[in-house]
Image (cartoon, rainbow, N blue to C red; front, side):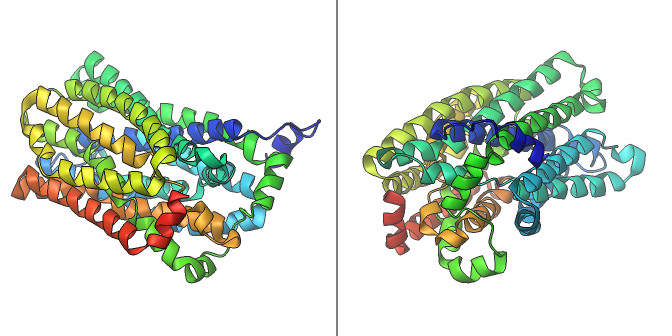
Length: 433
């Protein structure tokens, strides 16, 4: 496939443009986040009833969130496996295998039999498919985000850094509206029986489209040469950790506030509203889609602010704002639909500003020979520490100690971000530059 894709571009070549890289990045990230949110929404609306019907709804949701976290645990394993594939067979082969594994794992979930059919085997299969998604996500790193950051104009680095992050709210909008359509048009029994499966089929189709869109870029001779010139080539994972552990650690913890915030305004509030209020989940899906659209605008704003004031300043200021948000905002989820809307809209403004600058900031901080693998591993660890267990922890805390305890969890992420920026000023200057 890689040779065929190259052949399409061997007749004269084409000019490399950062805008073309940006399009590939947005397509790839949107497809990955659509998969992510389809699973997240099903973890609240479907899996507790389908896989854990013998538990009460709260326990079923907590177990669903525990399985949800498995993908983040598996991502570094995927990076290790697919780095070896990349080194042996090339970026095109790696990306093809990873995205077919991602699509296959996602489609397999669509055929998942429930507890009434195979008992606890349903949960075990869900764990297996979820880990398959995680391994594939670790392997789907194509280096385009790093390439985009390194080729951004000198005075537009913040603007280009926010582009990959647009995939998150775009994926959430599509996933929320698709589930909204199914929930509102199907009887509840039909939705639980077969209706919820359609978004997973759609996710597989989107993955196939995204695969060819990304292959069209990464396997061309021009981009292969650019990857080589920028020394964006896979290196040994052990060697990378040994040489770059300090940057990897700071890169994993510096964006913790935005990554914790990510799940606090996307996955957790849906579970809380569904379990503990009388408000309709369909109404909340509408609020979620509208808030995600606001998040798109906020991500664009983060690029402008970062170029004007510096990325480190934006990350630090938004971490402080998220800390303040954590002290009062979670209580809004108990204030009816108006409170939920305020929580989501304000949360997505802060999320967009913080998340918009939380990725790709450290590409230039790595030594050239470790930049490609180091960036992939940093991303995996940031998601694992900042987001993987956030829905489980927030729901568990809020259940036992009230909503303010979920805010305390978010506060801890903000404190870690501020500390990471404070204790690594040299790295902070790299980000600002």
